[in-house]
Image 1 (spheres, rainbow, N blue to C red):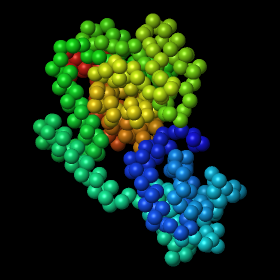
Image 2 (tube, one colour; image 1 turned 30 degrees about the horizontal axis):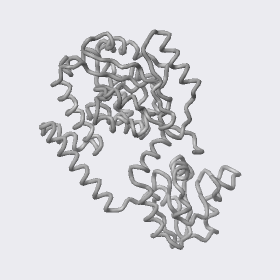
Image 3 (cartoon, rainbow, N blue to C red; image 1 turned 60 degrees about the vertical axis):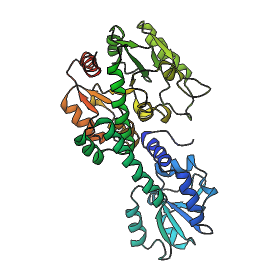
Length: 372
């Protein structure tokens, strides 16, 4: 992968997977067979497409264009010819496929300035078939009624139907089932902590509180790479440093990342009831809150929302991850409002306010909620 991995990039990679972009390319291949294509927009979305899909196997692309090309002397973009918008007037092509986020603005810009002929079709590159849209609609109905069947709460069902997507409804139902199982068991609640950044170790206090509480069985802290993505090589020096760091506190810790399979086998071996994510944005799909909701209650803690990375909080990828968590703990109502605003999770019952002594308050909340 040639692009720098960041939150926006990850959100687009995730989005392309969710809309089955491979299938969309097959449809575009048939639709635009024999036609010359210009890609418009040299942003992160195009990078995500070009890095992850062999687009030239499907489309006859003669070049790329963008308004930003007007301020550069570059003539290529990722091995494609790069054209200033005004230069499009002299080119012979049939289709403009827009790779920007705001398709309507691109169409107005190209038409208003007469950069393309009237006969040229302008369309978004992501063209979701009606059958897929209908399938998504059906999936949401199934998810919604599964939640209703599980919760038997018509009021929350109605609220969630209009505020949650299909995945979020599935997560909610999974968490209700898990809560019921934990409450009906007399065994200690099994807890796993995933740590990817020793620079922020506020959760060690919570780990110790749970470790010495007979109502919980806390596994060794699982050290993971900073980003759980197959394309990123493991920084062995950092991993060793993180393990050594926790060992200095005499805290039980393991390096949980399997280099050969790029998996966290210990997560499945431990079979935890609770999973704490230190950095949910960097969790790859295999271990995302949505996937793990089938097995455990997932949560994270925002110890100081006002000093958070708001660029990350606002990204689509981050929003998807946190909206599928069981709980995000914060220690005041102002932080709750701020966090919900940036992550767009208001009315989703994810952010939970606990009192100022946040770690102790979380333990009390867990005991009460899990009936321990």
